[in-house]
Amino acid sequence: MSFLSQLEWRFATKAFDPTKKISDENVELILNAIRLSPSSFGLQPYHVLVITNPELRIKLREKASNQSPVTDASHLLVFCTRTDSLARIDDYINLLSRGDSDAAKKLTGYADMMKMTIQPKSPEALKTWADRQTYLALGFGLAACAELEIDSLPMEGFDPGGFDSLLELPSHLKSVVLMPIGYRAKGPDFPKTRFPKEELISRDHVK
Image (tube, rainbow, N blue to C red; front, side, top):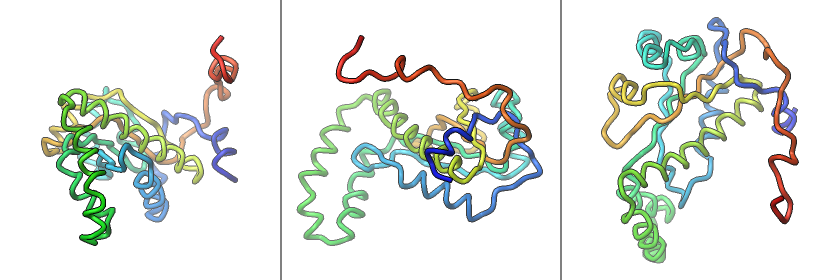
């Protein structure tokens, strides 16, 4: 079993078996894969909420067009974009330098470059930029689930504002995409279908 072979196994599960739960160990493996995902400058402008509370998930389901994965999956992961990346740069430099003041001084130029890149962005452009980093993290979460033979579903069909309100998110966090994880109640209805490589990939030139 490997990541590449498991890509054939996975599919976007729409029906989860509510009686099957993911072990704490596997949940941590998935979350760590998300934490290790790449991001621009390494700032990781996202936050992931792990929702297991049944009552809360029933309320969230109402804000997601009554889609059953919100309540039936073992865990519901809510990926949120952070809008406070500029304020996090100094904290990141401290992490990068491992608290060494001399090392931090050597990173001043890097910190200034990050600030000059991020500061001019409008709030809308900053959120779009952060959303892209959040989706990279989502992709790593989906891949980790596949390797563990845990089903997952990327979901955008929900009311972000409604989720933000129900989850009482601080103003710098905005829910952007969901990932219910668990175990499928049934297999896929259709065989895995993708456009041929020739339509998706070109080598050295575009036809």
